[in-house]
Amino acid sequence: MAKNPPLGYIANTPPNSMKEVFSDYRVADKSVMIVKNAIQTYINSFISPTGVNRQFLTSSASPIALQFVTDLTYDDEMKVNPNMRKTYLARFFAENTGRLPSILLIDSGVEYVDAGISEITAVSMSPDGFWEGTITQILKVNLSITIATLSEEDTDTLSMMVMMMFGPLAAVVNNYIIHEKGAKWEVRLPMSGLTIGQLSNVTVEGDTKTTVWSRAVEVNCDFETIIQLRRPPVYFQHDQATIAENQKRLPAFLNLSPNQMIPLGQHYTLFIDYMQPQYKLGVSDPLVALVTQDPPWVIQPRGQGQALLLVIDPNLPERPLTKQNQRSSQLICDIPFQIVR
Image (tube, rainbow, N blue to C red; front, side, top):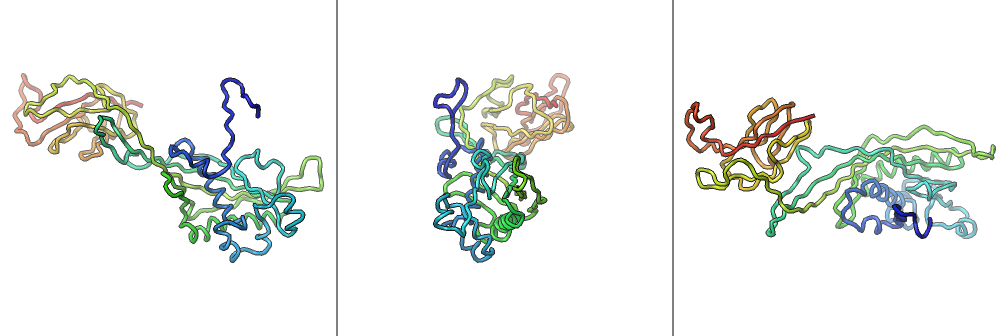
């Protein structure tokens, strides 16, 4: 890579250690990299002779499997440890070009997982008037752990060894959870459903005598992290009076403006200040949307259209509606909104 990259490009080098990867606690946009690094470190804890989980592999794998190690250099392999075989464990293609035997981590897709009724798990107002919230992000990262060697037997041995690491050994080592102390994320390994692909071979170009045998183990991991947000509150001006008839301040909606458009099929969490305990929320047209009665307050779209979000005080006396006054005496305020596709 050039020392001075062209304008508009950033010459970031791949992280070389777990410490570099996990040094920044803001990890929402690094989910795939964190999962691949966590899986790489987990596999290496078995294959490296100095790995913390090496003893589990030693007591369960064959002597042939124990020959594949990751801590050898070329000189060590040729001179010091002739019975050990250097195995390349990599998460980037460039790290593993032309090196065998190898274990390559390839992500085959990322799926967003709905966290439930709302991703927002905590909301508060700081003493300096800032809105603070905590959001949960859950992703399903699909990894293909590809094993490639120069013999069919070695490929079978390595692939079954990887299956053991993510199967029975994972239940003993970490209860299927990879987590760093103090980190705001965790990687959950699959408890079932591991699949191993079909064995395949390809002849090396220009060398008809050399064949590369490969096989992939599909591992679907769940990645969960929390995102902490902080921003100044935004208050919207409504047509309603700021003080209700009972001299109590009206509820202030921090994230809902009049005629705001809310996508159909997406729950919308409301942030409300000055919401009295006796107040209840309602929607003028239940075919358009519903709203939860207890915090967190969430608008649940049901169909396209317009409706009013109502704040009602059921403790106030109800009076009959007249032509002059079509407004319920229990209605504190209302805000129009729209449900759109």
